[in-house]
Length: 316
Ligand SMILES: NC(=O)c1ccc[n+]([C@@H]2O[C@H](COP(=O)([O-])OP(=O)(O)OC[C@H]3O[C@@H](n4cnc5c(N)ncnc54)[C@H](O)[C@@H]3O)[C@@H](O)[C@H]2O)c1
Image 1 (cartoon, rainbow, N blue to C red):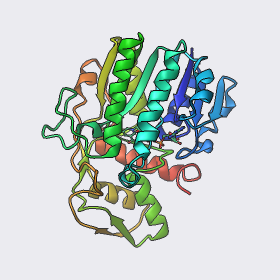
Image 2 (cartoon, rainbow, N blue to C red):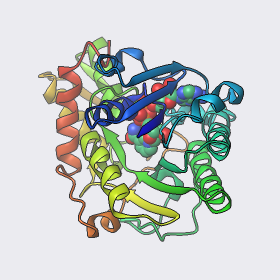
Image 3 (cartoon, helix red, strand yellow):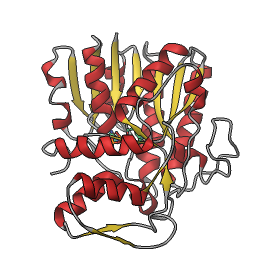
């Protein structure tokens, strides 16, 4: 089986690429390296069955012939800088919605009929029901990122229905681990490498979210793929429990063996568009038998040590 991973030089995509190669699949990664890094793929280049194309997915004419040779698409590419998307309001539209349209349209004219999509808890907006199940509505995202992901989901279900495709849509919790390009752990380590005495934390530190280790994320996506086979298969992908931003800051400080003071900037959220309280209900996939190995707090601690142990590949 030949698979395409869009955004495969990013955090989650690079872990996925290596795993699928090890499982004997032929892997094509398309990434423009706007956020990802080629060095995250260094172990992938050791496989003869690996191909990397540096390409902006908005370039449909170059994308189409590449998609024509693949059987399945793992669509991971997107803008992952949610705060920046609130300032440059066409960023998510282009890197999310239009890119997803191009990927689907290219699939339409090729043999690839299966798409696995990396969606997000941000599609729910500020949900009044927590833990939030897949059936929650109305869905009213508060970020351009969440709005784009919701639009992508809708495009995917329409393409699936009209062109005999199958889709697995995963609404991720916050995913953590090595090769991160963004996120609280990444930012805190970066800040502490510059100033080891004080850590500035956006908001009041009480923001609380579900966290999932990247290995559990890959396990969950593969599990869902093997256990469901409808036209559209929709799952929240999350671990148990939640973790506050203040707890993450403490985990990073202690992981780096520092004694830094934490300074909160104040306010209930990190930035406009940030959903301050996210608790995803992952029980739909868990009822099928998926069991994440780490809960939110354990995932955060493991990720701190993964990133610190991988400093030449992650944060420089
Ligand atoms: N990491 C998380 O916590 C999280 C949570 C929810 C959803 N997701 C989703 O999972 C997916 C992977 O996230 P990630 O954390 O690995 O992000 P990432 O930024 O590390 O990876 C995204 C990759 O897409 C590439 N890309 C973006 N626009 C492109 C374009 N136009 N053409 C080609 N390549 C392009 C980037 O260069 C990057 O390598 C994304 O779709 C993201 O929205 C991630």
